[in-house]
Image 1 (cartoon, rainbow, N blue to C red):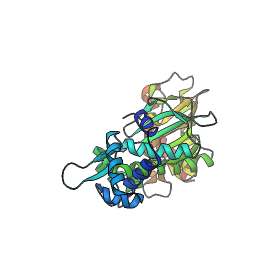
Image 2 (tube, one colour):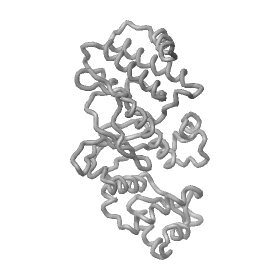
Image 3 (tube, rainbow, N blue to C red):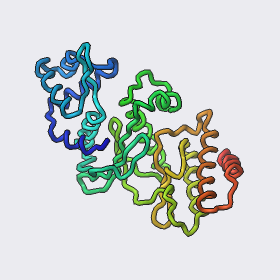
Image 4 (tube, rainbow, N blue to C red):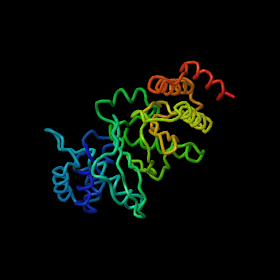
Length: 297
């Protein structure tokens, strides 16, 4: 789904509409479908007005009405987008957004954005889908101990987790995008000009690039963070064959009992890619063991 439609819908909303959307969001904490009466109570608005506006919001694709039975509503992804974009715009973080994603993953979309001051930024919209919900609940650290894990809320947890990791890493001098702000399921960072390693860009010194990736992984570990899902899809090669590590929602603390397991896998994944695609003479498993011995100190 494109955020373009969310931006278009946002321009049509009134303050009352936003209060109603926020009330639906709050009601979803304890309800699969939020009754209109509860929406009116949370929003502190007249029920007749709320029902009228909910019909309009439904037509705009911002809420979905329950089929049959008692009337209730839930936010759609588009409605959640509107709430997040509105807050980020009000904070002075975001003024404009690209029409289409410039990057797309299984559970996220990345757009180009512009701040009121004209700075180019990356806007990552987490979309943890309903189909992957049960599986991700089992394996994601950021949802493992949460009782309320609706698919919208899980996306919010992913965004919060990623922003937390980036904040730690940026302060530690690790090569990651600069974290600027986040709200709900959206993270805004500084824009990085680069080519994804998965596209196999021409490199003058592949082994040197691999070493730079591993140096950043080591710095991240010493800062308390393990990526946990590192691969060629999470590495940007920048001008001068520098590297930037991206996509951190699944990170682990270096103190986590399984931290070394995931750190070993990260190193082996990247080393295997460089051996396979660039012919770098390296033993991924041996390199990972050597790396672990070094970071253990």
